[in-house]
Image (cartoon, rainbow, N blue to C red; front, top):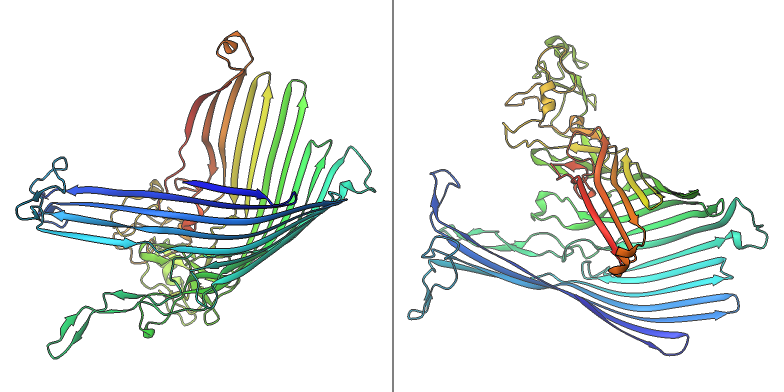
Length: 598
């Protein structure tokens, strides 16, 4: 990777700058599979050995040109920036080939060099395969401008406008306009503000902005032609390989955009010992990009991309820091706290909901995106305890006197008849929203102490108000191991009202249905970092080696986690949408180190 820039001062107020940057990546793989026989079952034998090799390359290129104008006139300060940029990503491709039937059968001797010069063929060429591929380019083109203005360093304004174009959108909407502005007022610099020992600085600020998102694959707006659509022709009904459109065009596919307004203040108190920042944000995301479900009679197998939903986020963020010196002891603390309220405000006009992003094995999709709910909320059956005996099953009746769960047995879950129709259906009629994977509260705290060369730092963080789908056990393996909590399962009347009986067939769907049984609170508090250090005072030994400072320390990461979640790690990450399929936990680590300064 590298970059090259050229900057020139046209006048004392005007500067132009051009920057070219790029990155090149190369990677590949090579492998050998020997022939072997360990039995007649599937996967137990390979009749013909093979060797493969593949190599890939990918290039990125960025170009930016800017013109900057700065002007100071009395109490007015202006800075104007105009710019143009172009970005080209994922340029490159790859190729690969493989041979089968090599005359050797071990990795050390295997190679692609078994070539007979007389016959001009490879002796390993029982048959060979080759493949070449070109990457799909991602291209962005941008024009942008920014104005910064201050008056007497107490009235602040920033205005921004961007026009971005992406090759990932349809011909009707390749470009999007994204404005933004912010204002600030430093109240404590006003003449009427009297100096005092309580409030040393006060700044009020607010703004709005719009940003775009094109994080989808290339050509999502086109109906691409694909292979595999075979057809029979003629009287002989011969099967002919065919190609056909996989999806339908969407020339109106456009940028997903997020509009945000915010207001807040910054304050320094008590001789700048205490600093407080409070912000309120409200964001509205329009035209969320995702696949659109279409009926089968349309005649295509692929789902086209569309702008199908809108949602709102409102958030309050509070950050505080405090420092104090008491004799030889220095102490500082900083913390932050944030709340989040998320709600879907619109889905496709012809549907009440769309399927969520998260799925789990044979259950299929376990979340749903629906107006009025949090984005990608968990959606499934609600349990009402466990049937302890046959009498409880017989007593669970509908309005006509029929059993609501006639096939249940003691030890099975009692499902809530959510729609009140007197039966538990296998479709979505009795499913309800069960919570969200989005934390309602996040927080963090950092503490620092130092005393006569010793220093101690502790950092903790946490979240609360979210649910996690605990999916550590596989459903596709009937005899897969259970966690030890299964030892507390229902084994007879009164033994459990939360963990059902175990069977090999699971006729009631106790484990096969998506329900609140799988959801657990994701609240946690984690001591992320704890570090103790000592700084050696300058001495003759350090002077001899030309050093002026030596610090030694011991550190621990992820030392303690307080949570009721039974999975490996409550920080499952946002990319899995709260579904924990055995995410590898963050390791608890210990470290000893030294820092030597010359």
